Amino acid sequence: QPGEISLSHNGVLFLDELPEFKREVLEVMRQPLEDREVTISRAKFTITYPSSFMLVASMNPSPGGYFNDPNAPVSSSPAEMQRYLSKISGPLLDRIDIHIEVNPVPFDKLTEKSKSESSFEIRKRVTAAREIQTKRFETFENLHYNAQMSSKQIREYCVLDDVSLKLLKTAMERLNLSARAYDRILKVARTIADLDNSETVLSNHIAEAIQYRSLDREGWLG
Image 1 (tube, one colour):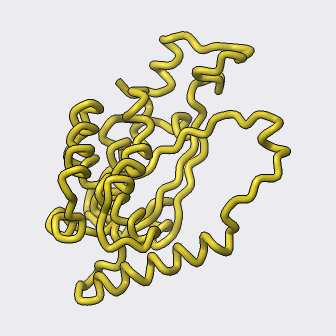
Image 2 (cartoon, one colour):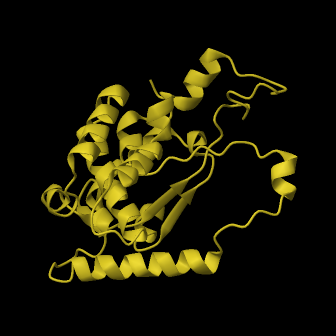
C-alpha cells in the first residue's frame, strides 16, 4: 500500500513541525529524495514506487520557538535543544536544497507600504526559467529541470569562473559542507541564474545559493 511519500509523486509533500516526527520516519525520506523512488520491503516481496516530489518542511528554531530572540518570554535549555534538533540528521538536511530562516517581523515593517515584486511578475520569471530548462534538457530522457541533473550534467551546465569557484571553495571549507551539498548549491545557483535570465552562473548566483544553506551556516545540527 503506497504511503504519503509515494502518493506525493509529481506533487508537494508538506511536513509541518518537522522535528515532531519520529526520527525513523524522517530517515525513510533519504532514499526518495536522492533517487526519486521509494522501495518497500515486506516478508514475501519488495516493490518500488516512483516518488519524485518537492519536500516543503517547516519547524520552530527551538522547542519554545524563540531561539536567539533577545525578547523571548521563555528559553530552551541546551539539553532541550539537543533533543529537539536530534530528530533531523545531517544526511537528511544535506538533501534539502534551500533552508530559509524566517525572523519575527516588527510592527512597522508589517504596516509599511513599500513597493515589491508582484506575484504576477514572479510568475513570469518562473515560467521563463522553466522554458529555459525545458530547452536545455530537450535532448535528454527523464530530465526536465535543474534539480534532476547528475554530477556529469552539473559540470557541463554549471561552469564557474575563478571568482565563483573561489567563493564556493571558501564556503565549502568554512561550513564543512559535503559533496552532496556542493552539487545542490550548484543546482540552486543554476536555477537562480535562469531566473535572472543569465546563461552563465555568476558569483552573485553562487553567493545567494550559499545563503540558502542557513542550517549549515548556523551549525544547528552540530
